[in-house]
Image (cartoon, rainbow, N blue to C red; front, side, top):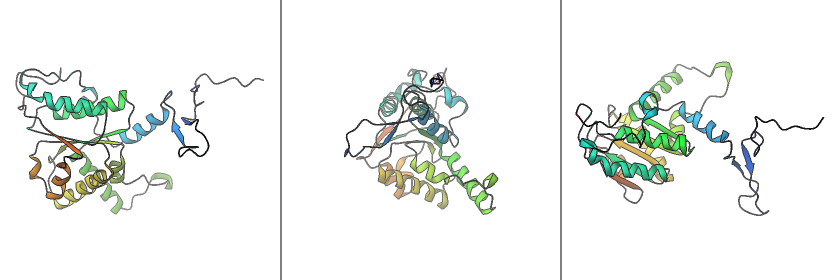
Length: 245
């Protein structure tokens, strides 16, 4: 009986999700497998793993650059909008956006994440700083209680490692959490790792940057790696101007 290809499988990688590059022997990448872009199965798996920890829920799933209305009170957010759009188009270095509460920063954070995940198929982790610290505390409590994976399976990577190594990280609401010595240490470990490896990162905060502890501010303020943008738009959640539909 002839071997009939399964029509449900990707005709390019035949369901493997990986491809071997057509390179001459001796090339540095010879024999190295790369994800198949035609089916995107590897990209989807990577995105799904990060989405387990993500704050990308509810309204954040629908926030985009298209429905960010740059009019009325939101007009001063144009520079932050353009910076976020540029990062989404080419995620390199760090983008730091700061300004008053309620002026569209979280919408821009979600818009970057949604573009990278849904359109560019780039594994991206979108987290709020309070969600991150809450999850880290819960992980510590679970560890101290001696809880292990059901069925004796391999334990997942510690959350801080997952966040530090995410291909792209978007951290919203930095400074909204209670700023303790422990919280400072976790944020520093996260930032220092990504800073040293120059991993693409977006940070959004309502706080003045020099109000952060020195070792955190020094990384956020490094103009060689970070593009720092002030969003001066006012809080218009309760006003006439609307960011969302």
